[in-house]
Length: 381
Image (cartoon, rainbow, N blue to C red; front, side, top):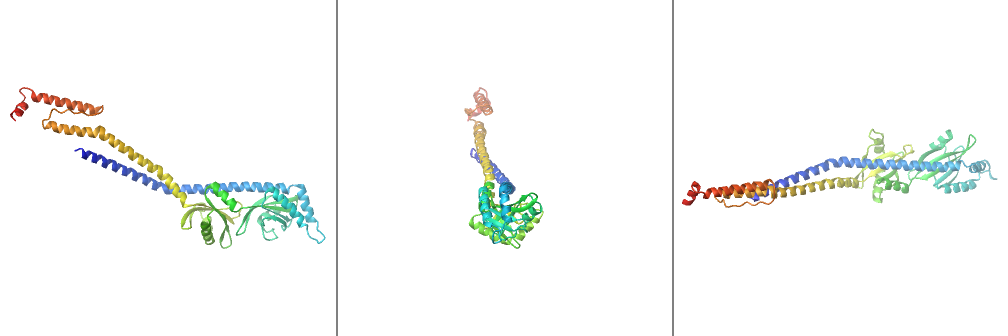
């Protein structure tokens, strides 16, 4: 008789534990996708926000450095005179302009600097080559400054490089005497520093006439090669996504057999030619799943332990005493009235045991009393 209540309790605890675990796991699976999507969106938002902030800081530094150089009266006077004075061969003293320009570039910590004449043709350049042609007049940022003689910044790129460029007029009175172009590279180092701050992978993509190319990325060598192949064939698809109503929403790209969450946005000041793609690897989703599943499953295990402890307490304090009382009652019905029920503890169970013992005493006294029919029946036996 004792085994059955034990088995029943074990079955009930097991069933409740299984239900709790199943419910917890269902909650994890139900919430996983939503939380994973939110985490990816947050990572992409963070990466792009950090990029915009950092780039604005770089623009501010580049513009301030350019302004400092371009408003120095000695520098403006020297450049103006050098452009106006020809040497014996009828050519501008490019060497002296280059020396002075390189000195100022180095002092300001710039990657490139170019002096253009008032028509927009390159006179002298130092540092990295920003543009392979001599005539800059068709470049948008130069045309903008020529039309409105104030400082302007933009992104210049080819299929392998991108520069943040600032154009600043060198003024004498109200006339533009020349233009100063300064540039800062947007390369692997810059992209990787952004990726580390935003804790996501980034790729700088140049959209060409027919296909895309990767200027820089934070991907490892194998993933970068796979992604470059993907970019070369996906430009139309990506452009359609950007142009759609959901262009700002994340989408999925397959790199090295894994699905990455991605978002593509024009690089700030790039005129829709250079794009920054923020990438969140599948491992982040797995981390989110583990972070969500661990506390839920830990809670389920804790609930199972609490239920087990409660079941043991219930068995010891309630069910076991009732089982013992059931056995004593059966023996009393068979005529064994000399029993003494002893149950540990206090409270209602102990009071029931005391009442049960009192009943047995009264039955025993009644049984041996003179004239008791029960005694005569027993004596005859």
